[in-house]
Image 1 (tube, one colour):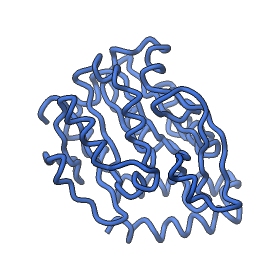
Image 2 (tube, one colour):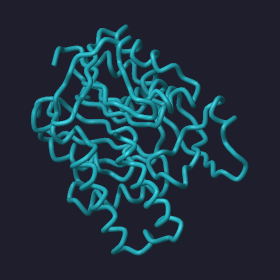
Image 3 (tube, one colour):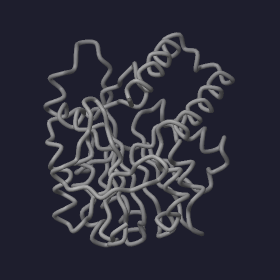
Length: 270
């Protein structure tokens, strides 16, 4: 069902992008507003979660890892507690520029700090494979994924940071309330780089786009991600449409081929 909705839209995007339609400011604005409308009405579960459980978003700063062009950063920014900020991470240059533009366009630039960074288990530099057909499907190049890259594909070096080092350097280590991770199969490495942050913020909730296909392509076992949270005392929930949550066992999560679900990980029962 998910792919039946998204595949035609991705094909249209790719066709328009090849013709540089989005270089025209008015058309780019129309695309952004259409994209935000699609996300809020057909794909995104967070808008309803915010309405159903606003307390989850007022516990501290929010980390938006894999912010793309800013849809989630915008809706998260409108749900924050007083004085809190969204720290948004996006490593692809064109997406990052659109992210910054959209924060201003939707009036939340004062509540979101955009970072041109990839996030992982170590600090340094990493290669990013650029998917010319899908602006939300760029991948961190792992050893396993490098074998899949075809000659002529675009790969760009980008800076990478761990969440533990980032929050420490920004002096927010013990004031993190919600973490959203959507990094096209690289989620396990992101989590390995934020172990100390999770220890210092026991009430923090982590939302992950769980897609076994991309994880396998990058060389990770999908089960390792769920084991990571279970071993640290987290309960796992599937976040469904309309903001509903359903507790799931780590070894019983079902995802249709080529699909994904949103997992909520919380030490407190939801």
